[in-house]
Image 1 (cartoon, rainbow, N blue to C red):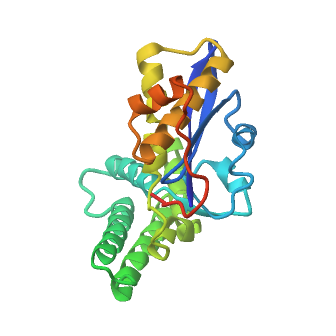
Image 2: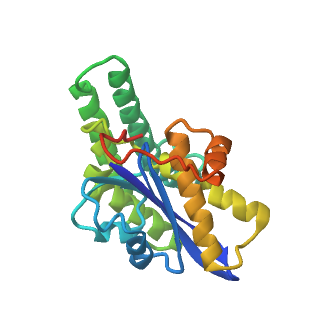
Length: 252
């Protein structure tokens, strides 16, 4: 299992893209002028990866056919919240609300089963939530079928994606080694956003790549229990800490 994410970064006055590939023990952050598959392939991970990729619903990730997908439920919940907020205030029920409630309930069922040391989730309880998710998404498609406005088209596309990609959204319910969200990747890439907010753009692509390499190294070190300052001191003294490159890698 590995998580993937991307974010914009201004370099030399133009928008570039930072791509992140991560696991529970390793982080690789790269920078490229392109956001799509060219930037992803340049990082050298996803094109060779075999396993479950956790990511948002950005279309280029789906072009990699040799992997399985876990679509980020946190992103879906934010999108569903937007649909619910746009619903009439006097509405007694909203398809987006039911879909979101079902997603949250399924995550809770998995968390409770893991905490209890169980081997599986309560099948009846899970089936009920899957059905609620499925029915609500179907109703969402029907209610937005007219696609008569930009907002309605967006909501219709969301409902269709939730239904068409149901297996990819709910993979975490059958494989507990897979997180339901991509929050880990967002955490690993957050410092890039903070750096830009505080210091502005980077002047050269070379400098941006060096910054991403440093962030990759420090993030990986932190995941191995190493302190940033100690890691940098060892590096400056010519005795760099290096992570192990063998053995199982935790998913979270």
